[in-house]
Image 1 (cartoon, rainbow, N blue to C red):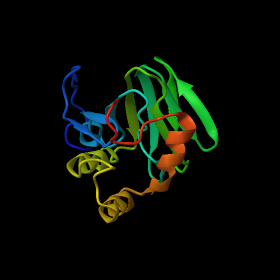
Image 2: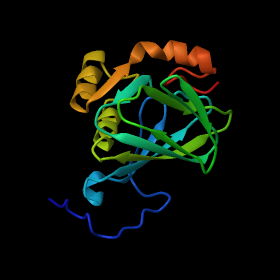
Image 3: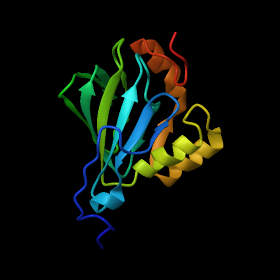
Image 4: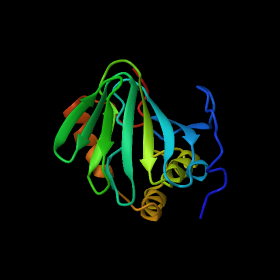
Length: 173
């Protein structure tokens, strides 16, 4: 089954696509699964200095590829800590506990490729809930379940302490 628009060429400009806030980092929707035949989707994540992107979590359905556009991006993949710089690609395979953050004191940006598509809709729903920090715990749990995502919210204080980060939603000081 071919998704509508899956064979149509498009150009996504630097300011195109809906943007929102996920509670700790931004999101800009660039290519939805519908536009790519459900093979992949792509979002951009701008991150303020020392921002933790998410609690430890793992995807059961999709892989993520984070291409660093600017800044330094840290990633915890299982027990391995990586730092990506502009031009680096960080692969986050499904079924692996992980998180990522801005590892620097300047803004950072990544392109996040999600394969197969579908998880971009999690981000859309999360934006409408006000992000991870504003969503009611039961609502967030239900959202995670629908998108086959396991999340450990209790990991946030440990991650913040370990990597010298800011709590999600905490304003810049």
